Length: 179
Image 1: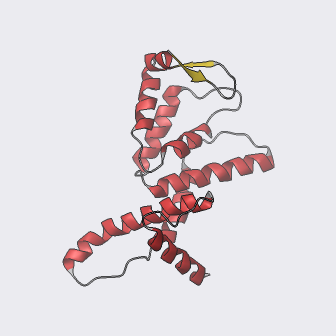
Image 2: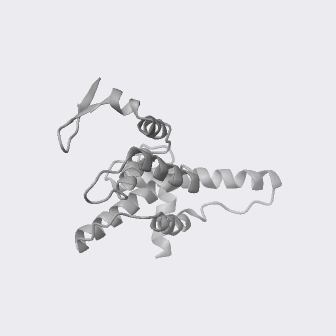
Image 3: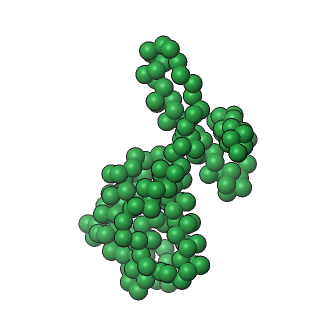
């Protein structure tokens, strides 16, 4: 079954051929189960591992995706960090003409660690034990909300109508005050 044409080389992409390959089937399964907007940045990130003069096999792509998803939980932080990593590596490649593929996830780890502190400090300490137990989940929800809205804002999209806008706005004001 002809699915579509490749936008780059204009060859036919056949769904049935892709599904015949076990790794291709697994690749599609992983991508369709991703949450928090991780799919597109993850595919772009995996492309950074592609050798300059050859294609990245489906088997290698599956392995790389599993590596990332095993090391980092799916979240807006991961989606944001993947996007930042792709942008930074592509910019560096463009400036230096160094097209060497990535060989590990070290840079992604650095980007995630760099971005984590940007979303800490939104909550306040509570004396009640019940509230203390709920705090880690609430902080994770706040991080995800901030990252979600920040992605839209960076793309120039209107964010005033999004749920959590007030949380993001407060965080933005805190960031401006910290500088």
